[in-house]
Length: 199
Image 1 (cartoon, one colour):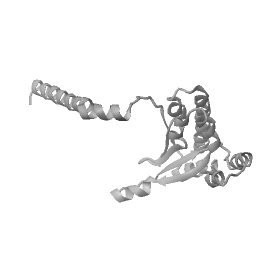
Image 2 (tube, helix red, strand yellow):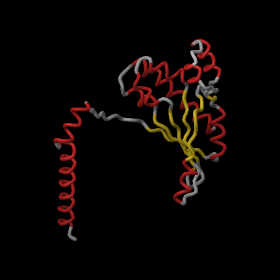
Image 3 (tube, helix red, strand yellow):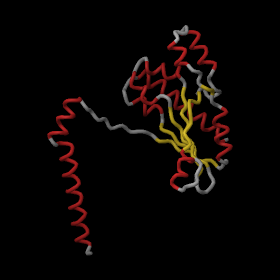
Image 4 (cartoon, helix red, strand yellow):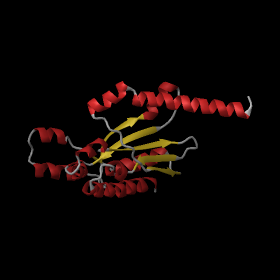
């Protein structure tokens, strides 16, 4: 196929794709749905952090977890009407050296075995209810991103990679300066947690 034909084919595919997308977005049914449900889409920019370490996966994950506390069953305490100051003290005591707690983990490496792949990759769900409260009392939509997620996985060359999205981008998108200030603090704490894990 000549360069001209390839170029024309590419233009044709692009125009067709744009037409289909336009139809889907601007069709009467789509516009009616958006009007009825007041749907609004916002484009945000997120800084994605990735750090590579020569340390083995087991050593990095061990150092990471050692800096995390364990979240007490605060929801039960809240439902039972526990005194707020006592609950705050209980949560504060549960913090790890990083200021964060471990809520749960997801072993994506184990899941990949279903696809015939052998890989080590764990997602850590970390946070602190007191940090979340500092933000959500000003902006309830910040609840969407609390707690945070950090992925640690082993690369094919044996190195270990840690990845996460910067909290200040996630929480800051809603434009509340008081909440964003807390999120910037989370940026620093998360960076320190990762840095200590790979030392």
